[in-house]
Length: 133
Image (tube, rainbow, N blue to C red):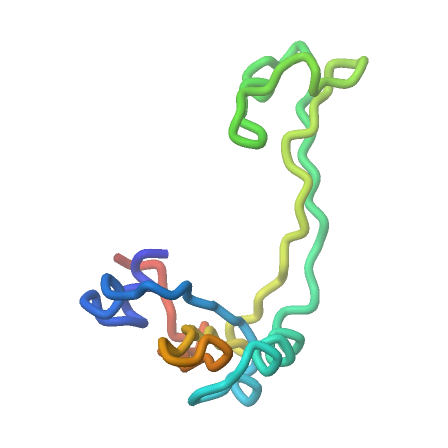
């Protein structure tokens, strides 16, 4: 994520940031270009990714202890997290399907003089981003 963040904001501006940044993935038409408010960003977010799939990963059981040692909730797993047959839930997540050709990333921050007003720091098409460093 460092490469995305650095491409959106100049390093000096990023270091001077005291207010949290708000990242919104939505359609281009819904992302505000200028000052806005949280309600408008929430409406824009509703036009963002709306499909995905459930991902649930279970270990194969107590005979496969290598999977049983993976961290869950930041802690090493233990017997208290296993079912009676030795299987263990390792991941239970909803994976959102992002379509880069349709969605943009907008970065917003509270105005120092008015915390209810958010200014747009940058907007970029997801199709233009890459993971190259």
